[in-house]
Amino acid sequence: MKIYDLLIIGAGPAGLIAGARASELGASVLILEKNAQAGTKLLMTGGGRCNLTNLNFLDIRDFASNYQSAANFLLSPLSRFGPKELCSFFGEGGLKLKEEAKGRVFPENNKARSVLDLLLKKIESKGGEILLKAEVEKITISPVDLKKIDQVELKDGRLFGAKNFLIASGGKAYPLTGSSGDAYSWLRKLGHKVIEPQPGLTPIKISEDFIKDLEALSFSDVKITLKNNKKNLSSESGDIIFGADNISGTAVLNLSRLVDLKNLKNNLLEIDFSPNINLEELNQKLQNIFHGANKTLSNSLTEILPPRFVKVFLRNLQINSEQKANSVSRQEKELISKNLKHFQLKVSGLYGFDKAMVSRGGLSLKEVDAKNFKSKLFNNLYFAGEVLDIDGPTGGYNLQIAWTSGYLVADDLFCK
Image (cartoon, rainbow, N blue to C red):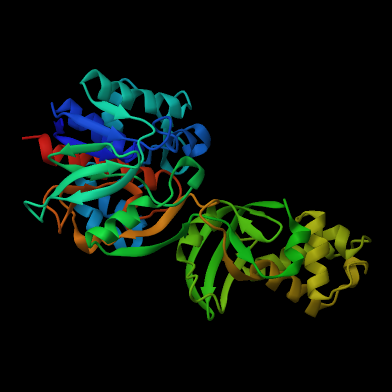
């Protein structure tokens, strides 16, 4: 049996960059991938354009703060291989990059395939191997040294040995790409603690029946706040879109990371449809629209809101939509403006992993060395990417963690 310097489980972003860096440093590398092709999920990111990273935060501490409880853990790794280093890595490999709104970085040609091709070329040109349709059954501890992994066994019975092992097989999001959470079972059998995964960056389900009447309506530049027992948990600004029983859009996806599925009671989403003006200014704006108008209230409000939304909105407030706008009472005007600033929806849950962009939860960071992403239980076992209990917002933050962790595993092992 050939003994590789590094055996990597998973040919996703984390596994591929680890394989590329390790091969570049002269290590013998084998990547095992259960799918029929490498980089399946990578090709889907950013709508097929691959949002590589984000340059919106120049200070690493500010950048790391996007990862909530994992922020302190990530300070050192991101300072060693963060967004700037990543851009240099791909730039030196010949990939031209561009920065778009809110710091998002994409290939200049808008093709995720070019990112994958570059990584595959780096691996294969240095003798690295990728074995496809290779589904791992179990990871075996060495009978000689219980602090080391001995080999990996595939479901077809084939065995592979290595000096070092990297689990980069992803989480449970996008199961059609092969991310079925296999690693969680392996880790538990090895004695590692796994924080129970839940869907992240997913549409938020809404309780109210009227939501179906708003399906496909979208709004730009609104402010949306997640609340629990009247306490503001977090706010996001951006675009939103209503579904038949849910609400989505970038702002909502980011807030979904804070929804506690075990404690949904009293969770609300509050939408401010006019975030750039205060309540008094909105009152004046409505007064100007209604004053002297010989139109119905419903028709007047369509100057600033979609007609279908106006219909549902006024119905819920029990305000006569057919009355003349200039006859609307002061109390009704105040009710309208108040609800346009504080439109509330009850949270009933999240969509599952099939709709989620990432997994929340995973391998506990308490059992991982932040310097090199090595296991604290085994001396030759490493982790990278979504298998770790790290998740960030949309905009390239989750891919950056895959790049950072995968690169540093290889760099720490073989850059002497």
